[in-house]
Length: 330
Image (cartoon, rainbow, N blue to C red; front, side):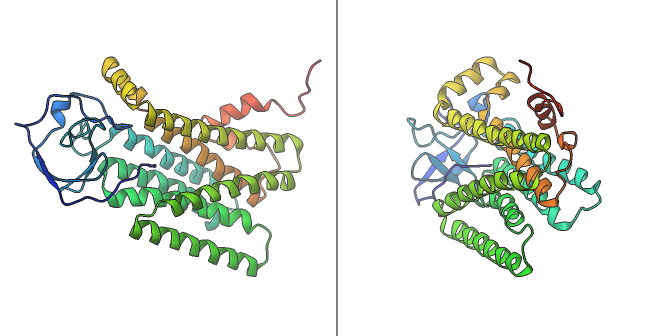
């Protein structure tokens, strides 16, 4: 999952080679791996990009240090030549794991319809596209990474706004959401326009949160189960916000984090790859959103849902939810 913005290359050429590589630290890129910089330089011709990026002739985007010379490359492909950002790639797959877990649990139920599976596939799509981007750092995989966020939000919007509605209303909502998704995808990928993508995604998340809170109050009769679902939902929101805070730290404290990773060395340095933790916490938040929406729109809200949730959500729900009929002691 990416929120980096890349501009297109200009026509200025630079050359980096093993014989001419500078002996200084590599680029300070959030989420970049940290080993000996001398291992990351290979002979190639690159296109200079405005700002702090280079788009290389092999199709990869890499950064320079902000205060460094323009021919210094970042530390990508240092664990293996096939994966640009090792931790960021594999942490993205947590989305896929949660999606698979949700599908397995869903197919064990009696009423596992196709419409209920789509949000789980959307969650898996986010992880697959994010992993593809962090593995290759190519422009088209970055576009797919960002568009995949709508693959998760759009089905959730459809489910919460078509619950117990007429066929005409359901059809209208489907047409509107499909049109919105198509317009955002085309504009974002063809024009490289980020604002429309960001605004529509943020608005979608806000609509899901507010509508879900209302539906929980309306459709969950048991007070204990209603409280449990609210607590689970709050944990999901908190997880997403904490992940965003971690991402901000990774952006603005990049150089200190790089020094820490160099100091502690592998494998402990992986702990300080904060962009990977952003993936972890947003995956938890996304999975919770899918589960809560599925429960309230399918009518499966008459008993405690804790046991069917994946780790660590189930343990957190037990910890903060108490037991049925528990009373506060004076």
